[in-house]
Image (cartoon, rainbow, N blue to C red; front, side, top):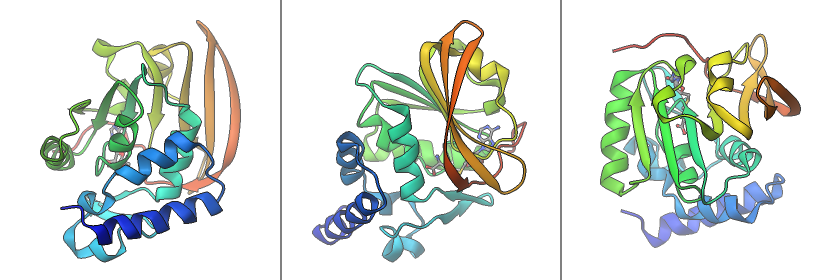
Length: 214
Ligand code: SAH
């Protein structure tokens, strides 16, 4: 399932990520553990450890490893954190987070992706991840508040509902902007209804769309 060859390719990917500026040792350790080739169609297995996005069905893609590393680093994951991820997709980002945090809730709007990824995560043994089928714009109020919220699709505005589900002191990381280029933003909830914002470079994402698909 995860061979020496895969581990070798993975360590080369880690070198690429470090060269690109990823410095958080926890993120590097977590990404060294997650077998990315299992989160992709067999057809792409050979390329699984390149810093590339690949199709995962339903017109969606698994994010570039570099993007996953940046978003994970910005969340500053802590062992006690309860995290909400919007956009389960392949489950790879959730798997990385599950090595660093206590509990991950992850929402996907495409039912087939939700179903396939739920089966995969259970099979590999990622028990800290709870997958949900639904519209990420609504979040998941029943498990709120979250220490951190991560949006892994490109948005044009920050949904108010998600900010409400974030605990005071928590971060929400979201790629945001008009058009294809999205600026990575980290929003800190300083107090109820008080926020600060930082920007971290431009990235490409599939769109953050309202509603669900079956
Ligand atoms: N984190 C994923 C990235 C997948 S791409 C991974 O590691 O593979 C982004 C995903 O967000 C897609 O699967 C897309 O269907 C999903 N998405 C987009 N808008 C959404 C919404 N409103 N609610 C939930 N998921 C959404």
